[in-house]
Length: 250
Picture 1 (tube, helix red, strand yellow):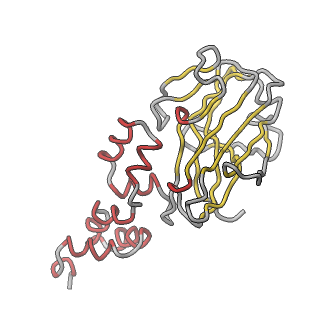
Picture 2 (cartoon, helix red, strand yellow):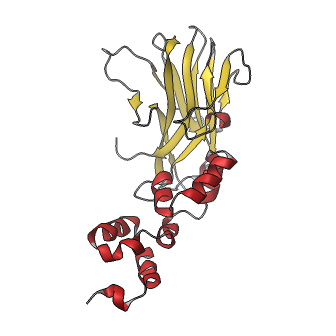
Picture 3 (cartoon, helix red, strand yellow):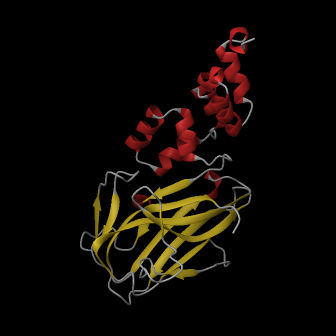
C-alpha cells in the first residue's frame, strides 16, 4: 500500500521533521513518494537554528540577507549555513573586520566582486603594517564545538610582500592570556611544502588561523587576529572575510 494515499502530505512532512537532516535527505532519495514532503520548507525549517535569520543578517548586508532568506529553499539555506551535523558556521565580511588603515583610500579600496557573498570586499593598495581583527560573540555559535577560523582571500597578479615575511595568526578569547599563535606565508613559493593556503573551490583561497573550543556559548568574544609588523611593503591582496566553522579531528 502506498502510504501517501493513507496519510496527507502535511502529516508526512511533520513525521519527517521529527527525524534528522540526514534521515530527511535519505528519505528524499530512497523513496520518490516522500521526496516532495522530505524537501519541503516545513521540514527543513525545523532543522534550522531558531536564530538563523539573525545569523544571516549579522554576516551579510541587509539587502543580501533579505534576498537569501526569500530566494533559497529552507533545505538550501540549511546546507548554506550549517554542516550536516547541524553545527553553525559563521563568516564576518570585510566590512565587519577591523582593518588597520582600512578607511584610508590611500591604503585600501572597497569594491564589489561577483563571486563574493558580501556586497563589498577590501583590496589592499599598499601598506607596511598589515593587521586585521575579527571579534565574534560566541553565543551565536554552536556550543560544545571546536571551531577553526579561516582567512578568506585572493591575490591579484601584481602582488608583493606576502611571499617574503610570514603573517602571525592569533585566535583567543578576549581577556584571556591563553594565546596559541602560529605563523605562515600567505603566498609561499610553489616548491615549499606544506602549502597551508587552500583553494576553496569558489574562486577564493583560505588559510587556517587557529582554533578554539566553544563550551556553552557564553565564553564571551572570540578574537581572530592576523598581523605582520611592517618590515616588508605589501600590496595586491583582496579580503572577503574571516570564517568560523566546526573542526573535527586533527
